[in-house]
Amino acid sequence: MAATDLIQEALTKFIASDQPGIFAVKGAWGVGKTYFWHKFAEEAKPAKNCRAYSYVSLFGIESVSELRRTIFSRQTALGSVNSTLAMATRKYSTAALRTFKLSAGGVENTDAWADIVEDKMNMAELSQAVEIMKEFDGLNPETDAVLVARVDAYVEKAGEDALAHLHHGSITPLVARMIRERVEAMEVKKTIPEVIELMSKPGGYDPAQMKYLKGYTAEEYYQFIKTTKKKEFLSSLKTFHERIGGEDPAKTVRERFEQALERLARESKINARRVRYGVGFKIPGVTPE
Image (cartoon, rainbow, N blue to C red):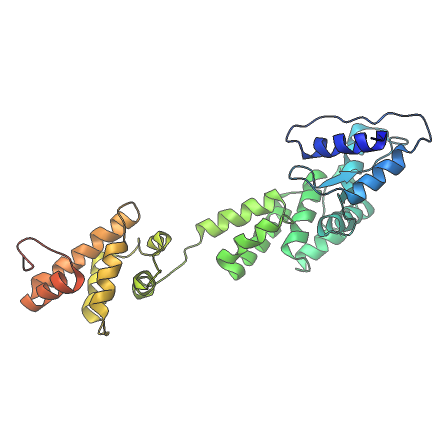
């Protein structure tokens, strides 16, 4: 096996590793180290913990902070110089480098900032720009407020579907965390009939639906049952009752639903029979044996 093959095999294992480290390729001037690296980077498959690289010469670098900025601004995705990650990073890091002094912070006059304010970016591009601004110490209360507003508007429009976009990997961790927090905090509303209809269908059992009912009171269940006049309604209630489950929030839903059934059963003998034989809920001393 050629030396380059051995190096390529070892380097592939290195970038796939979860552990940070240093990989040194040594050789005399002119043997092809640079050529080997560029060829490897173009063909390599991005790993879970290594999706991009930066090729930086130390000649002319005068400080650690300058080195850090240069490394960040020259990120290129492994395996594809035209990937979304590479293009977004280059676009907004170039804008940042061109339009303001990094050490001074303040991103309000950059092209990236203008695109954020004017809502020209998709969420992946926005998250890349934010990472660059954060790296350059450019985030401040004003930029944070704009970022929050953009994420809020995005989640409000996309709803729970916003989470599906996070699996593509193009949205960076900071913005992804903000999206998750907002989706989890959303008060998605579903009515009692909507959930009962879904839960009572063949194959419609879904414990996650209980979260939509936890805010309803026994009175609201009672009014729903009492006023609904649908064919096979009692059969739907019976299936729903059987599928509720016993752990919170289902436990709370069950208690309130059964309180409504008992109240209904106590109103008349015909209601007691409907609850006992239609819904299948037995209430000692109230429903028939």
